[in-house]
Length: 376
Image 1 (cartoon, rainbow, N blue to C red):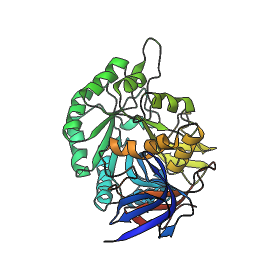
Image 2: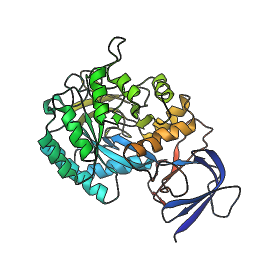
Image 3: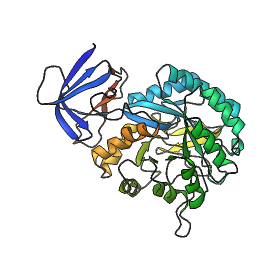
């Protein structure tokens, strides 16, 4: 048995912080104990579950849709910021290109590097396309969907669909039958149209509020339909996409609803400048990524920043941890991670003094092994 003991730790469990030691055996948590013990001292640092990001397009200068190498490099960049489980997200493109990209994702999934892929398109609304390339949006097509499922070789985990499009409900049926999580997003749906999608089997909202019809008092649209359906809701907590009150509103509906995502593009970790997303020019200024028409085009966010900002916004650390780890893991059916309990996969983050402001990641453990290239 391969075992290690981490001592002098403040371990964030679902029941609160345990001050003591953490035992790891064969890649899993084998015990959590209060009080002193012999082992590797963490100097009183806070230990939280590894982050699970189910919506990310790039980072560290790497666009996941550019090449297999760029996809892998972007995953490694975000791992250094605490994301131990990733779904690579693919923006709208021609179906042939998406099939190729899904093949890269399948290779990474089969190597144990990622949990699979998220298709953010091409079955989205022209009215609410945001930074999705409108030239490649198409109406729901079962044949095209089948080709993409085959290309992913069992690793397509999530697909975002605009439910008001012709044939969308039938496509939701096909996705659910194929074991793919359906998310409602980039949609101009009415409340009733979005509700019909949830009744049909959709179980997630893609970046709530962003890329969807806004709430109106006579037509509440997909936002309130998502909240009323009780589904988990993605949020981009970068201080640009959403007001902090939105996080609190989602949490008010239940602490299992809030899901933090990055929606990060290749500019993340690089800085302001000109970039390309889905064949469209993107300008990043003061950390905000936008198309020429002003539409937000993803983010320059990392999950450690999203987690720390949530806490600064008044979210309880346990709720912030659930939103960054347990809730997204549950969305994609990964019950073996996202919490620190005996039997869970040992995906762990050692943070700086959590009584400070930034909760920066000092060390990353994935499946019981320390990751070498942790961000500093």
